[in-house]
Length: 252
Ligand code: PTJ
Image 1 (cartoon, protein in one colour):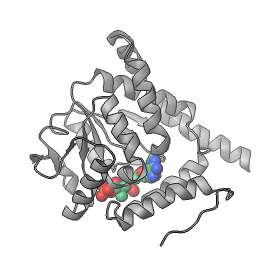
Image 2 (cartoon, protein in one colour):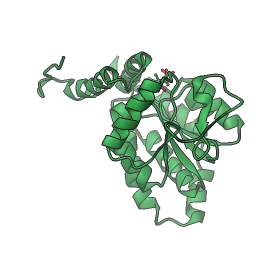
Image 3 (cartoon, protein in one colour):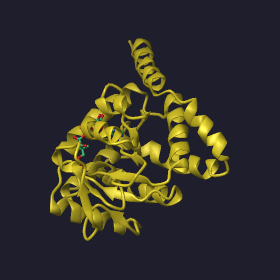
Image 4 (cartoon, protein in one colour):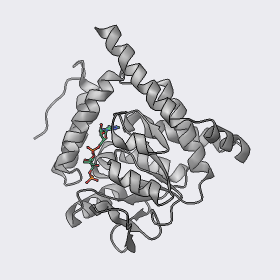
């Protein structure tokens, strides 16, 4: 059932975003746990002021440099991200020449089929990890996320894994890959394990990354390298927590 959210509602934007997840769940894209994950994310977004903060901008710049320097960057896509911003995902994947691969924690054939259909409807030309695409298993991992594409995550040197669980991030890092994540919760295990953690809402991050990739394509390899070398993920996580602390102080 569709509910009318008046534009005058002070939380209209957030509620419209929430509706995308609910529609995604009704259409078989989003896992039940995905609705819970969104609620958790919303809470941290409140604390972060619902805007892209300077520490997230720095992480976005480093992430774009890493993707531009990568030989095989891959965008690992789950149900929440596909439901929240499919057009932006397709645009980023094309701009960065970073193929997308569907990789689900709550993996079912029905969800895979629904996600493939959804992404194709939103302009995706190729989606790895499902259908006829050949897959293999990552040894370090127990969950359903261990099944990866031979043309995608398996050979990737850089994997972009927004809204991820800590185990797989750890497994990917252990297998020698560089991991970039997006997570609103700086206390979560994933941002602690990833090499680059963008503490921001995926809805805001993906279009910003496309914009930065366009700009940074003009940079030399040396410039991109320098950006990565001067990036410190621990400092970024520290700054994000400081931001939450000062906002709470201000609000109280
Ligand atoms: O589609 P599947 O089967 O692969 O499952 C996807 C979910 C998200 C359900 C699964 O990966 C999961 O359970 O994830 P977690 O462990 O709940 O972690 C999700 C993280 O994403 C949490 O730390 C949330 O705070 C964060 N998050 C939620 N919504 C957003 C977000 N981060 C950025 N932008 C959001 N919109």
